Image 1 (cartoon, rainbow, N blue to C red):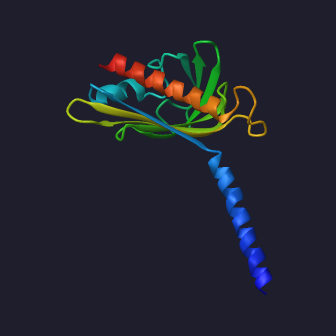
Image 2: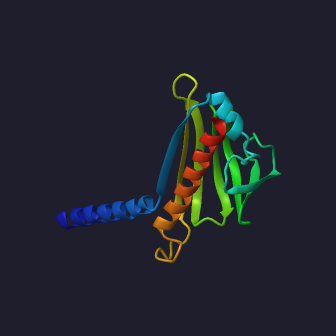
Image 3: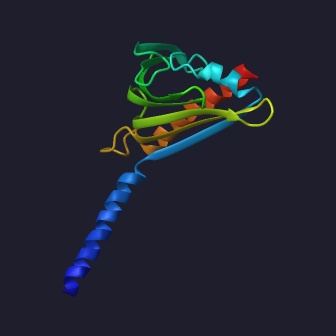
Length: 173
């Protein structure tokens, strides 16, 4: 009987490490910036899912389906170099100054991407904008592929967050 329990215990550890490997594949990023402008003023710039003109990498935002401030809206972001990023709005809370969206198709080296943009008060006349996401690298079968590894995915998304938040600060203050 003790061999049975030993095998059961070993099996449980094996399943745990397999589940942990799947969880560890998820990359999480978070960037925040304090802006010397009221939350209402900042939200007025970023709170419209149909207008991402505040981000310097985006040349055009097109709503393909639904309404810009309603869950289920689908947009295409056209980057300055002509790439396309298709996104779906999954949560929209104007009063809470929060929106969540997912990428359905993209030129970015990521998959299973979900993100949250939130604006909140950070003292008198100041805002804190937080952009966070969870995603996986684009090519799980070939983690060493050029431009498809975890480092490339983190760098791409991190660069998008930083340039967007820095520009938002610049145009809001």
